[in-house]
Image 1 (cartoon, helix red, strand yellow):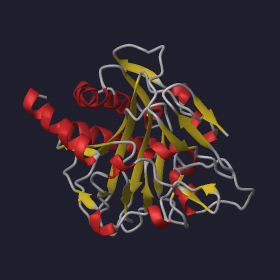
Image 2 (cartoon, rainbow, N blue to C red; image 1 turned 45 degrees about the vertical axis):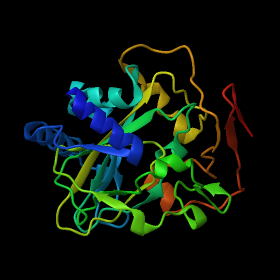
Image 3 (cartoon, rainbow, N blue to C red; image 1 turned 60 degrees about the vertical axis):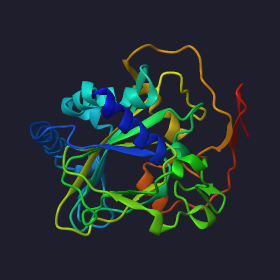
Length: 295
């Protein structure tokens, strides 16, 4: 990116909580990634490599850790131009955090309720960013990401329901839908998402796919403060992509509720759609610039 473009990109991200780089990946790169999806799913039992949509359609809705399942996604997550954008947002020392694929099939694709990514993965600071790479031309009709600009400046919303972490924002903290904007963009475009941005995506009501690859990154001095079954399982795959590792955790002051569910959950979809009844769990991490504590 040139200096003026970088300044505008960072300004957009800081003000809105998201920024868009249109067609950062070219047509041949997008085609390679979509071919890789087909190759991953070319198995007799789709459920062995992906989470499937509810019902009997047998369609995949999510592929876990695609960077581990196909070299095309591993290369894409480390794409120099992509990392240039990430560096502009969180600094030069970049850790790969995790990756996933959302596959919203025509007339089927599941809803993703309002949430903030940070609620699932609280860290000592908020220099984390997810890059949502559209692999199809994306509009409202085929479930473009929707977000509330500036919502990342309001802190962490309540993601609990009936005493349990349910990974969605409801009740008084739920955003006014009229404040949301749809982030439409052509295939190959990347939406960079702040971890405190409130965002949502509707079911896919069109006759077109909306496939999206989501590699996530964090600054090297952002350390996790929760190692539950969901938050902790990614740590084995964390690796340095650019710059240097840090032996110091940079801490932002705040009180962030931990993602304590009543049982281990497999995905955002499964958690938001419902969970078993159990004993309520509570927990907060209080960061005062010194240490993190949990109860």
